[in-house]
Amino acid sequence: MKIFLTFENIKEQIQHALQQVEEKTKIRDEIRAESQTKKASCKEYGQEFRAAVQEERAARDFLKSKRQEMDSVQSTMNRLNDAISVGDIDSKIRNMEHMIQHETLPLKEEKQLIRVYSPIKS
Image (cartoon, rainbow, N blue to C red; front, side, top):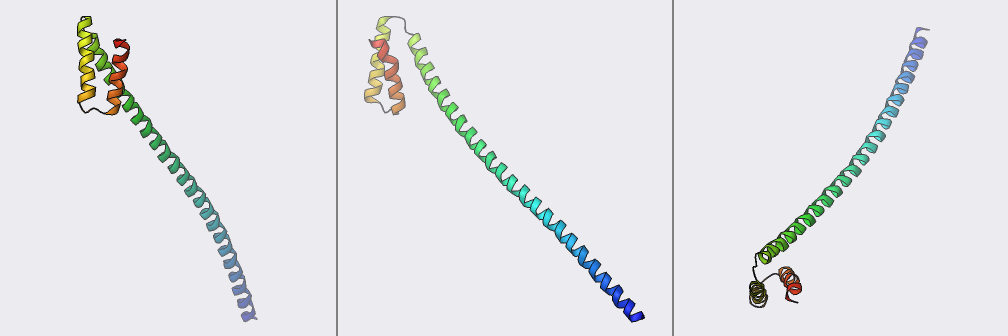
């Protein structure tokens, strides 16, 4: 009889241990699913962040180029504003035309000079 009770006791312990294993496995699976969800969410946020940083860089580069363009125009305007007479203006226009024809300038700068002196010339 004692052997039978021991066998029943061991059987109960095994069933109890199996229940605990199942519970722990279920908890582990829930934690793993939650972890994967958070990992996917972090990855998505990381991609959004990198896209935002790239967009910011592009905006800063655009702003920088516009500032340089404005500085160039302002510089040209200041030089033209310093002109005292029609003769000075004609002289400055000739100098600009000479620069365009004989000096190596970036195309952007050449176009800018032409835009500045064309209205003045006519």
